[in-house]
Length: 412
Image 1 (tube, one colour):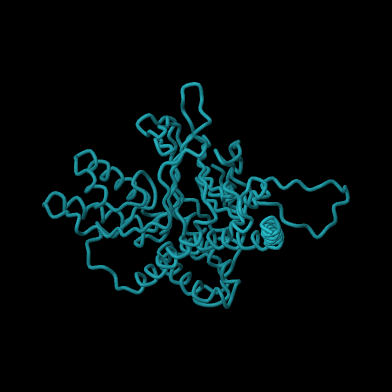
Image 2 (cartoon, rainbow, N blue to C red):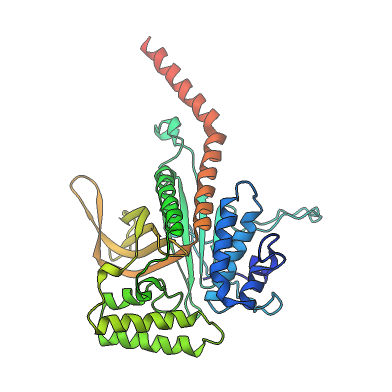
């Protein structure tokens, strides 16, 4: 997985120009006081509420997200000069719809003319969105095609059957190995996704206005990294209350306390572990206290987009794809993609069913996004679709009218 170059992070370059942190960058705020994460998140909510009126707020929102991400991954330095540049090398990828490569940032336009008169190579010209974290990168490419009228498709359907957005998650393991997964999203799915997102945003807003829960911290404290990332201590023990899981939590607690001087917030996670184990041992740990609330923004069960393309053993590429919102998290939106190879079964009605009991070479990755990042990604897809349809509408309408006129002439 490609890593974002820390030296280019907005966390170190974007300064607040109003409020409590005026004149400081998010990186400065967190290095001076690691306990200020909640204050930054509150500042972000205020900025988000006025982003339509003050578009420059988006840079400050992005800077806050990047600073918190660097802090949670132990990579936050006091200044950009202290930050260790990350490796930006990316894994080789191939083309969609089987698997698409993730784009690097497109070169920024230069004010200087190209004196060599050689065309500038844009490595990922169809990329409309990119989100990079320490160990994962999410990219979205637009692969939009006009309706195939030569094959008899109605021109006013606008899109060919293979018109799509390609999501790619590029991941880097601790050993440095790069892997990626891809999935396709049809433009027709965007309308429902917008409606689901609006509902999720409304629920998230209502959630932020609620008073803090009276539940034990075992249910409300979420791990931000490691094996149990995204889960609470209660989640871990409710999945498996064995001595093995209990001992793993105790071992993780030792790691948290060993770094408490550098990361004071570790104390809260360590206390939550103690609380969860106490509830387990006294028989008071129950699923009723789990606060996880999720809703689907989009879900595609296992698909075989190229079922007729099989290897010598009869396997073809399959994938599943979901976008889920967890109302309890600071990074509530999760993009989840699974890629594998599996055999398929042909049904009597002509459909194809992937047989996941035969699946091999499974790869499954997820990327967590803030509310503002997911809205940005969705907005880019919607706007790109609108502009594409506008660009071809006159042509498609003319084809439709010409064909309608020709049909009437034949009837006469």
